[in-house]
Length: 313
Image 1 (cartoon, rainbow, N blue to C red):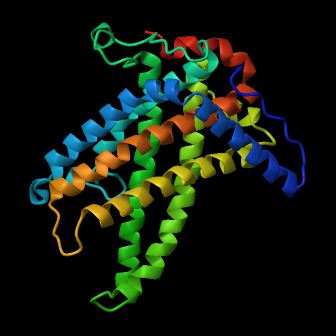
Image 2 (tube, rainbow, N blue to C red; image 1 turned 120 degrees about the horizontal axis):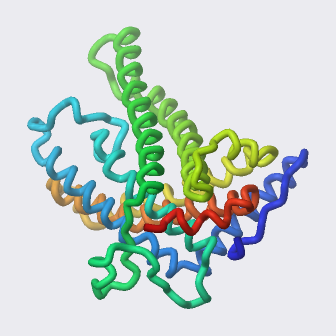
Image 3 (cartoon, rainbow, N blue to C red; image 1 turned 90 degrees about the vertical axis):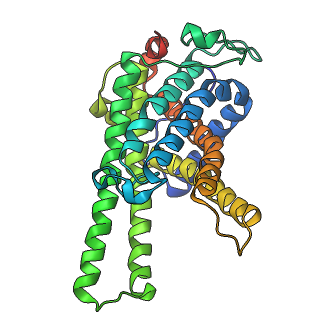
């Protein structure tokens, strides 16, 4: 993979040197994304837009009148709060991964945007770079992403029920905010790290599957021998950067756009949430795919030749 230089195999090294290598790898990913910002945006914007559009419609249908929403579709561990959101978003996330990895392995000349993929009806739209595909490999990658998101979401929902049941068993009703806050903060921190860990490895396995054409998590794990902590730390940094920017902007926009004494409607809150989430979904998936591509390009070099069919019709 030519856009990013390969990483070093890391035998036993001092913590200081390990931190230095992690920072250098993060700098490579950010540098690559900055140098190729427009082609990567072209590759990712349309699937991410479809994700936002579908999730907005889903939220409108289910939560415009919350009392009418079927309870078997609802779950606290998802955004919006239905397990259908994980299934709806997964195919489009898999497309972004396939397009970004294809771009990294088969980069065209600098400054040239090439639309090499997409259904014919989309290619004729006067918007450059619209890319859409649902091939077999992307569909299987979407199943893996959806399974991981469903697992994490249901685990969070189950944890919430256990927390409420435990507090009810040891506290008298009604529960005060002081009773709930410490436990909620502890579970939130745990979910942040546990969910980030699962998401990081899921992204790597999805990237490896798109990269090689075969699902081989054990081989992927062995390929990173000596660099496991390094990879997880890099993914945590990437996810943290996007999360801080995303929720910071949403909070700032809410404080600026919504007066303190106003009672915003459900439609206003939902549209603002998803409109602000779209660019950060692009950033999140592009950075995650570029990180996975950097790692795979260093430790799975024989698979580079298999990347082009990853997004081929």
